[in-house]
Length: 348
Image (cartoon, rainbow, N blue to C red; front, side, top):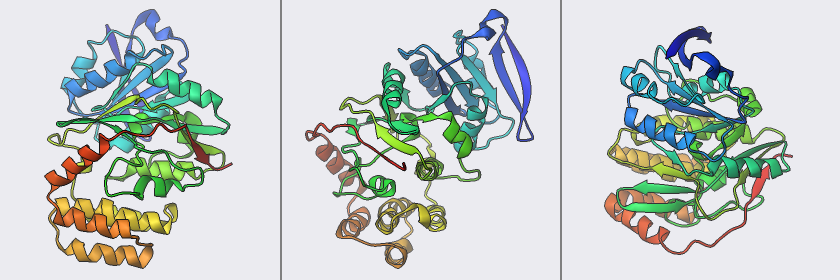
C-alpha cells in the first residue's frame, strides 16, 4: 500500500510516493541514486532494477518523473523494494532540473546519477565508493569506463584516461585521433558528493549540455578532483539506441554554439575550437545546415586554437557518409585497449 505526499520545491508542488508502515524507517543510505525519467516505463523499470541489484545495499533510489506520466507511475508502484521512492513533477522541467529535485530530496551524502535508458553492472557503486574513500581530494567526483551499446554491438569507452595535467575540457572535447570514444564522462558513470551538488546545481533552462556544463563548473571548485576507477572493466552500460528519441539527437547546433560561446571561460582555446569543429559541426551536419560548414571554422578560428585533427574531423563529418564513419569507429574501437592506471586531476 502506498500513500501520496505533497511537498513544495521552489514554489512547485511535487507529488511523492513512499511506502506506509515500518518500511519508512529505512536506515540512512550511503548513496542516493537519482533517476530522471518520462514516458518510458520499460526503460525506467530496467534502470531501477539495475540500481536495486547493486552489491552495495545501503542505498536509496529516487525516481524523478519529469511531468505527468501515469504509465511510469503505475509500473513503479509494482516494485516492492522499500529503498525506492518516486517524485512526480507537475510539469516537465528537463533532465538537469529533475536531477536537482532528486538531489534536494536525497538523504545520502553521496549522489549517483542514472539515466533511465542506461544500466549499471552490479558492483558499480561498491567499487566507486571504495575509490572515493581512498581519494586525496576533499571532494572527489568518481567516474568509470562504460559499455557503449548500440545495434552493432558493444564498445568499451573511454579508450584513454587523461594525463595528469590535462585540462578537463581538452580531455572531453579534444581528440588525439579521428575517432570518437576517447574522452567520455556521462552522468550515469558519476558518483558525486552531495555537498558539491548543493553548491553547484545543474543550470536551469539548458536544453542541451547541462551535464557537461555542470561537470566543467563543478570541477573548477577548490578541493574538487575527478578520478576514474582504475579498472579496464566497465561498470556502466550506455544504451545508444539511435532509433529512440534522445535529447542528444536534436539538431539545434546554434544552441550548442551559443552555450559554448557564453561559457568560453570553461574551455581552453584548443578545447573550444575542437568543440565547435567536431561537436557543433556534427549537430549541424545532422540538421543538413550547409552554411555551418563554412561558418563554424571561422568561429573556431576567431575564439579558439584550431589544430590539424579538428580540420580533418570537420571535413570527414561533412564529406564521409555517416554509416562509414560509424563502421570505422567500430573497427578502431575493437582494437586492443592498453590497460591504464587510474588517474586523478583537479584543484587542490
